Image 1 (spheres, rainbow, N blue to C red):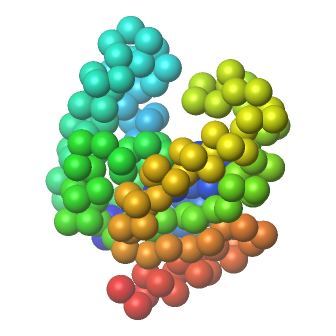
Image 2 (spheres, rainbow, N blue to C red):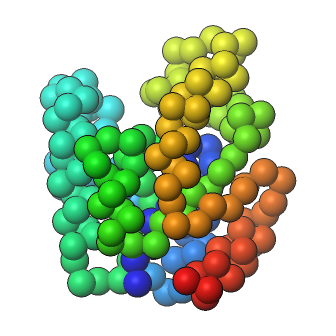
Length: 172
C-alpha cells in the first residue's frame, strides 16, 4: 500500500502523516527530507544554489523512485509537488492520494506564527498573507482536487482526521 498526502503548507500533512503511519504501521517518508538526505543540501539551499528547475527535476526523480519501489509507505509531499512535472499523474497511477483541504482563513491562522520558518511566505507582510495564500491555493487547487480522496482539516483534531482517512482507505 502506498499513500500520498498532499495539500498546502499548514494543512497538517506532517502531523497527519505521523499519526497515519503509526496507525497503519507504514514507513513514513517526508519527500522534502528524503530529497535533502539524497542531495546533501537543504531544500532552501538547493533552490538557492541550483535553482527551481533543478529542484523540481530532482523532486520528480525521487518521487518516482519512491513510488516505483515495492515497499509499502506513506509519503508526505511538499505543497508544490503535485503541481509540477506531471507529478499528479504519477501519483494517481501509483498510490492512493489524500488531499488535506484547508480554508484560507485556517491556513493564515496556522501559518502566521511560523512565517519566518516558511521561505515561501517569510517576506510577505502580515496584512498581505491572506491574499497571497488565497491566490496560491487557487492556482494549486486544480492539482490537489485530483487526489483519490479529500478531507477537510478545519476545526478537527488529528485523531478525527486519521479516523476519517481510515474509513476512506477501507472503502478504497
